[in-house]
Image 1 (cartoon, rainbow, N blue to C red):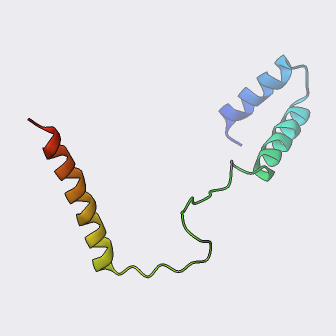
Image 2: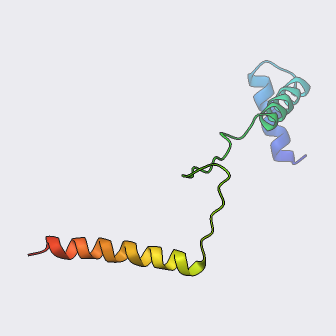
Length: 82
């Protein structure tokens, strides 16, 4: 163990009224307990449509859909301008 870390742990144990062994044991238990807990909510991908339905989109179909959205968006914007 690094000498500086050892001294920090010894001082913290003394301030807390514990032995160095008890302090290190508590720190290890806390660390191991944190490891057993999940890090957070599990990732969930939100999608639309029927579960299990296959999507048959070709790269060209995706490109065309984006083009249609761009045309609709920019056409609507150009009508709003004087």
